[in-house]
Image 1 (tube, helix red, strand yellow):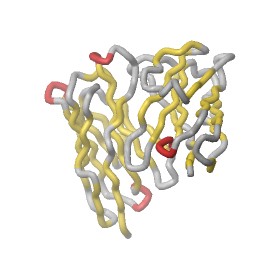
Image 2 (image 1 turned 90 degrees about the horizontal axis):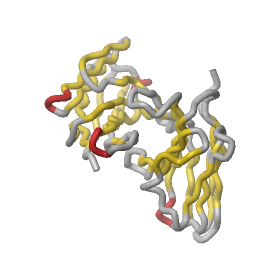
Image 3 (image 1 turned 180 degrees about the vertical axis):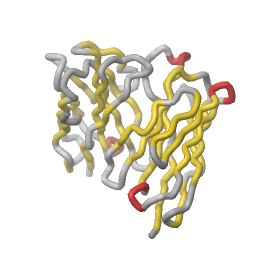
Image 4 (image 1 turned 30 degrees about the vertical axis):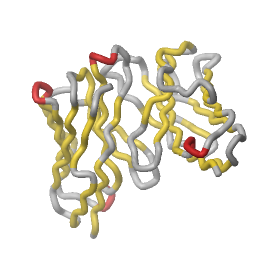
Length: 115
Length: 111
Protein backbone atom coordinates (compact mmCIF):
# COMPACT_ATOMS: atom_id res chain seq x y z
CA UNK A 1 0.00 0.00 0.00
CA UNK A 2 1.40 3.36 -1.02
CA UNK A 3 1.77 5.91 1.76
CA UNK A 4 0.88 9.59 1.87
CA UNK A 5 2.80 11.47 -0.82
CA UNK A 6 3.88 15.10 -0.51
CA UNK A 7 5.76 17.46 -2.77
CA UNK A 8 8.02 19.29 -2.87
CA UNK A 9 10.18 17.94 -0.05
CA UNK A 10 12.04 21.22 0.38
CA UNK A 11 11.27 24.81 -0.55
CA UNK A 12 13.16 28.03 0.06
CA UNK A 13 11.45 31.35 -0.64
CA UNK A 14 11.79 34.98 0.35
CA UNK A 15 9.26 36.67 2.58
CA UNK A 16 6.19 38.04 0.82
CA UNK A 17 6.47 35.37 -1.89
CA UNK A 18 3.84 32.69 -2.44
CA UNK A 19 4.24 28.93 -2.11
CA UNK A 20 2.05 25.86 -2.58
CA UNK A 21 2.33 22.34 -1.25
CA UNK A 22 0.69 19.22 -2.60
CA UNK A 23 -0.54 16.10 -0.82
CA UNK A 24 -1.92 12.82 -2.12
CA UNK A 25 -3.44 10.70 0.67
CA UNK A 26 -3.61 6.95 0.96
CA UNK A 27 -6.15 5.58 -1.50
CA UNK A 28 -9.61 5.35 0.04
CA UNK A 29 -8.88 7.63 2.98
CA UNK A 30 -11.72 10.09 3.38
CA UNK A 31 -10.07 12.35 5.94
CA UNK A 32 -7.06 14.54 5.18
CA UNK A 33 -5.14 16.78 7.56
CA UNK A 34 -2.53 19.50 7.18
CA UNK A 35 -0.21 20.12 10.14
CA UNK A 36 2.48 22.72 10.75
CA UNK A 37 5.53 21.62 12.74
CA UNK A 38 7.84 24.39 13.89
CA UNK A 39 11.35 23.31 14.86
CA UNK A 40 11.42 21.86 18.37
CA UNK A 41 7.64 21.59 18.67
CA UNK A 42 4.99 18.99 18.03
CA UNK A 43 2.79 19.20 14.94
CA UNK A 44 -0.16 21.59 15.11
CA UNK A 45 -3.30 20.99 13.08
CA UNK A 46 -4.05 23.66 10.47
CA UNK A 47 -7.03 22.18 8.65
CA UNK A 48 -8.99 18.93 8.41
CA UNK A 49 -11.02 17.77 5.41
CA UNK A 50 -13.66 15.05 5.26
CA UNK A 51 -13.88 14.16 1.56
CA UNK A 52 -13.98 17.61 -0.09
CA UNK A 53 -15.51 19.47 2.86
CA UNK A 54 -13.72 21.34 5.62
CA UNK A 55 -14.30 19.86 9.08
CA UNK A 56 -12.07 22.19 11.09
CA UNK A 57 -9.94 25.15 10.02
CA UNK A 58 -9.97 27.05 13.31
CA UNK A 59 -6.15 27.10 13.53
CA UNK A 60 -5.57 28.15 9.91
CA UNK A 61 -4.35 31.77 9.52
CA UNK A 62 -6.88 32.56 6.86
CA UNK A 63 -5.43 35.94 5.98
CA UNK A 64 -2.51 34.19 4.31
CA UNK A 65 -3.14 30.43 4.28
CA UNK A 66 -5.63 28.61 2.09
CA UNK A 67 -6.26 24.95 1.36
CA UNK A 68 -8.49 22.98 -0.94
CA UNK A 69 -9.42 19.40 -1.70
CA UNK A 70 -11.68 19.92 -4.67
CA UNK A 71 -12.27 16.32 -5.74
CA UNK A 72 -11.98 14.78 -2.31
CA UNK A 73 -8.66 13.14 -3.06
CA UNK A 74 -5.47 15.19 -3.26
CA UNK A 75 -5.08 18.57 -1.61
CA UNK A 76 -3.05 21.75 -1.89
CA UNK A 77 -2.02 24.16 0.85
CA UNK A 78 -1.01 27.67 -0.17
CA UNK A 79 0.70 30.50 1.69
CA UNK A 80 0.38 33.99 0.23
CA UNK A 81 2.31 36.07 1.22
CA UNK A 82 4.80 34.13 3.32
CA UNK A 83 6.29 35.49 6.54
CA UNK A 84 9.50 34.53 8.31
CA UNK A 85 7.52 32.75 11.05
CA UNK A 86 6.02 30.39 8.45
CA UNK A 87 9.34 28.54 8.30
CA UNK A 88 8.38 25.02 9.38
CA UNK A 89 7.70 21.51 8.15
CA UNK A 90 4.24 21.09 6.68
CA UNK A 91 2.90 17.60 7.22
CA UNK A 92 -0.02 15.99 5.49
CA UNK A 93 -1.81 13.04 7.05
CA UNK A 94 -4.79 10.90 6.12
CA UNK A 95 -7.13 8.46 7.82
CA UNK A 96 -10.00 6.22 6.77
CA UNK A 97 -12.52 8.20 8.77
CA UNK A 98 -12.59 10.97 11.32
CA UNK A 99 -13.44 8.85 14.33
CA UNK A 100 -11.36 8.92 17.48
CA UNK A 101 -10.00 5.46 16.76
CA UNK A 102 -8.93 6.18 13.19
CA UNK A 103 -5.17 6.02 12.82
CA UNK A 104 -3.57 8.97 11.07
CA UNK A 105 -0.81 8.16 8.58
CA UNK A 106 1.69 10.92 7.89
CA UNK A 107 3.57 11.89 4.77
CA UNK A 108 7.28 12.81 4.75
CA UNK A 109 6.54 16.53 4.98
CA UNK A 110 7.64 19.65 3.12
CA UNK A 111 10.34 21.70 4.80
CA UNK A 112 9.74 25.41 4.11
CA UNK A 113 12.39 28.04 4.75
CA UNK A 114 11.36 31.68 4.45
CA UNK A 115 14.28 34.12 4.16
CA UNK B 1 -7.16 23.74 24.55
CA UNK B 2 -5.93 20.59 26.22
CA UNK B 3 -2.38 20.66 27.59
CA UNK B 4 -0.04 17.75 26.81
CA UNK B 5 3.25 17.58 28.67
CA UNK B 6 5.97 15.06 27.99
CA UNK B 7 8.98 14.12 30.06
CA UNK B 8 11.88 13.97 29.96
CA UNK B 9 12.49 16.42 27.09
CA UNK B 10 15.78 14.72 26.22
CA UNK B 11 17.12 11.25 26.94
CA UNK B 12 20.45 9.65 26.04
CA UNK B 13 20.78 5.89 26.40
CA UNK B 14 23.41 3.27 25.83
CA UNK B 15 22.31 0.61 23.38
CA UNK B 16 20.56 -2.20 25.23
CA UNK B 17 19.20 -0.01 28.04
CA UNK B 18 15.52 0.35 28.93
CA UNK B 19 13.58 3.62 29.22
CA UNK B 20 10.22 5.04 30.21
CA UNK B 21 8.69 8.12 28.59
CA UNK B 22 5.79 9.91 30.22
CA UNK B 23 2.87 11.90 28.85
CA UNK B 24 0.55 13.93 31.11
CA UNK B 25 -2.64 15.50 29.79
CA UNK B 26 -4.98 18.02 31.33
CA UNK B 27 -8.42 16.74 30.30
CA UNK B 28 -10.37 13.56 29.59
CA UNK B 29 -9.41 12.03 26.26
CA UNK B 30 -11.07 9.70 23.80
CA UNK B 31 -7.93 9.09 21.79
CA UNK B 32 -4.28 8.88 22.74
CA UNK B 33 -1.57 7.92 20.31
CA UNK B 34 2.19 7.56 20.54
CA UNK B 35 4.29 8.47 17.51
CA UNK B 36 7.96 8.12 16.64
CA UNK B 37 9.51 10.79 14.41
CA UNK B 38 12.72 9.42 12.95
CA UNK B 39 15.77 11.59 12.23
CA UNK B 40 14.51 12.09 8.65
CA UNK B 41 11.25 13.59 9.92
CA UNK B 42 8.88 10.70 9.19
CA UNK B 43 6.13 10.30 11.79
CA UNK B 44 5.16 6.70 12.49
CA UNK B 45 2.19 5.69 14.60
CA UNK B 46 3.25 3.34 17.39
CA UNK B 47 0.13 2.84 19.50
CA UNK B 48 -3.50 3.86 19.69
CA UNK B 49 -4.07 3.57 23.43
CA UNK B 50 -6.77 5.73 25.08
CA UNK B 51 -6.71 3.30 28.03
CA UNK B 52 -5.12 0.05 29.12
CA UNK B 53 -1.88 -1.59 28.06
CA UNK B 54 -0.55 -2.72 24.69
CA UNK B 55 2.69 -4.31 23.60
CA UNK B 56 4.42 -4.50 20.24
CA UNK B 57 7.80 -6.17 20.30
CA UNK B 58 10.21 -4.17 22.44
CA UNK B 59 7.70 -1.36 22.88
CA UNK B 60 4.78 -1.23 25.22
CA UNK B 61 2.43 1.49 26.39
CA UNK B 62 0.09 2.00 29.30
CA UNK B 63 -2.55 4.70 29.68
CA UNK B 64 -4.27 5.39 33.00
CA UNK B 65 -7.07 7.60 31.76
CA UNK B 66 -8.51 8.32 35.21
CA UNK B 67 -5.17 9.77 36.30
CA UNK B 68 -4.51 11.46 32.94
CA UNK B 69 -1.16 10.00 32.01
CA UNK B 70 0.38 7.53 29.63
CA UNK B 71 3.74 5.77 29.65
CA UNK B 72 5.78 4.41 26.75
CA UNK B 73 8.32 1.72 27.58
CA UNK B 74 11.25 0.93 25.34
CA UNK B 75 13.24 -2.17 26.24
CA UNK B 76 16.65 -3.23 24.93
CA UNK B 77 17.00 0.02 23.02
CA UNK B 78 18.65 0.08 19.60
CA UNK B 79 20.23 2.92 17.65
CA UNK B 80 17.26 2.82 15.28
CA UNK B 81 15.04 3.87 18.20
CA UNK B 82 16.63 7.33 18.09
CA UNK B 83 14.35 10.21 17.22
CA UNK B 84 11.55 12.15 18.86
CA UNK B 85 8.62 10.43 20.55
CA UNK B 86 5.33 12.32 20.59
CA UNK B 87 2.21 11.73 22.58
CA UNK B 88 -0.95 13.08 20.91
CA UNK B 89 -4.45 13.24 22.37
CA UNK B 90 -7.98 13.96 21.26
CA UNK B 91 -10.23 15.47 23.88
CA UNK B 92 -13.97 15.23 24.36
CA UNK B 93 -14.03 18.88 25.42
CA UNK B 94 -12.70 20.30 22.15
CA UNK B 95 -15.69 18.93 20.26
CA UNK B 96 -13.52 18.18 17.26
CA UNK B 97 -11.48 15.22 16.12
CA UNK B 98 -8.17 17.00 16.40
CA UNK B 99 -4.99 15.46 17.71
CA UNK B 100 -3.08 17.74 20.08
CA UNK B 101 0.59 16.88 20.20
CA UNK B 102 2.97 17.25 23.12
CA UNK B 103 6.42 18.78 22.71
CA UNK B 104 8.06 15.38 22.51
CA UNK B 105 10.93 13.45 24.08
CA UNK B 106 14.11 13.39 22.03
CA UNK B 107 15.80 10.00 22.43
CA UNK B 108 19.39 9.35 21.40
CA UNK B 109 20.66 5.78 21.59
CA UNK B 110 24.42 5.49 21.39
CA UNK B 111 26.21 2.26 20.42
